[in-house]
Amino acid sequence: MSPLNPTTTDFGQFGEPVETFCLITGEDGGEPVSLLPGDGYARVDRLTLPRGTRLGALMADNVPPDAHVLAVCPGRFLDSPTPGELGARKLAVLPAGSTPLSDEHVRTFLRTAATTDIARQAAVAEEFFDLVGDSERLTIVDDAAGTEAEFDHTVGECVWNQQAGVLEPGDQQIFPSGKLSVTAAEITTFEPDARLLGLHGDLTLRGWPIVHRHADPADGPEQQRLFEALSPLVSHPVTLHVTAGSIEGVTPQTPGAAPAAAELDRLLTDDPRYRVIWELGFGINTTTEVVPANCGPNEVYGATAGVVNLGLGITPATRFALAFLCPRSSLLTSDGTAVLGARKAVRRGRMRRVSSASCGCH
Image (cartoon, rainbow, N blue to C red; front, side, top):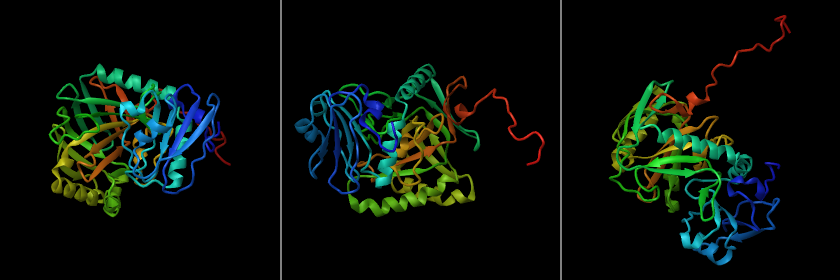
């Protein structure tokens, strides 16, 4: 397998090959996606999704009932097919409508998906849910900033989501795969009164922001402005003060964080629905690298041992949906076991060895 020229077999999230792999692309130009059939697939069918046509309708009418389907449609907002439309097909969708994706971004995520170890990802997800399920209280800590928040997931309603591992017939999943999350209600239906009631304390934001918009292209300039206003978070952290899943205040940790903190304050004041931490996410794709841009698929980024991320708002209920990568944070169980994040990435017990020449001069 060459990650520069992936084949259908390289995408392990589909599992065992079937006769037909179907690649669905949009009408809006860009470089065509090149994909060859791998071992086990007889053919790759290529379909174009016409403007005004739903993905599910196209699949129901034109895609074999047991096919594996990959949808890559930059600039298009794709509604999830209904169970009747999807049937026994397996569907993976590159999130390519809510944030700008260049041709190079698309190639990057195709290569990421082709080199993702799906078996390992499934094992990480299984271990995650085992540890979380056995611990009533979880803690999110940022050791560098000294912040800590407690999450009691037994309080109120919580919905756990998995976008990782091997698809089963009738499943649909993001592409590349690699995200786990917990929300206060069903992930696709925003309920303004829903809360992660067991979440209290201080959370540090430091990492790339993601600003999603809905289908109105007129929101594009404001989306870009908001992303740029929040971009200081890459290097300058802020603290969110959280009570019962709601943001009560924002404090910059450094002078350089002040502009991003002020932008967050303005957003929370203008639309209090953004105060709700709608999603606690956990990226577990350790193959992908962060694309340094406003890029939705960055949400699966897992560094070397998983990455915590936060989600505020959900389109179209709110004008934008915000996600924040927090690669310095760690998720711990009640006994201090690192589930994922910075603490889990620390390798303990390894002896330091000097590999320079013994004479001390070169």
